[in-house]
Length: 108
Figure 1 (cartoon, one colour):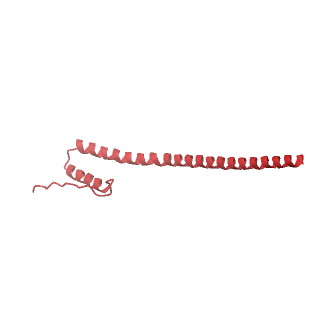
Figure 2 (spheres, helix red, strand yellow):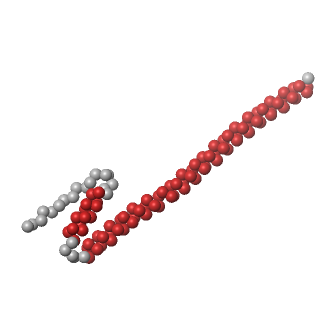
Figure 3 (tube, helix red, strand yellow):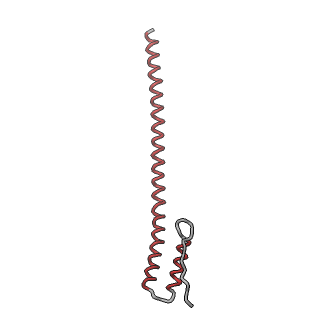
């Protein structure tokens, strides 16, 4: 009878140990999956962010170059280039709505 009690206790401890290890294994797998997703999102954010920033920076740099040229160039096409810049600004407004452009009336 004593042996039967020991077998029952040993079986109970063995079942509890298996349940604890299975639960721990499930938690460990979820943590690994979470870390993998976190790393993938960080890599995606790093890949996406610089290119978008660089593209926007290049557009701004090109606009500054044109504006510098316009400021230093007093040619006859100055008004035409300014209008072209206004038209471009209207096309690429951030809100998707063209910005109001005031046009001066030319004196004939």
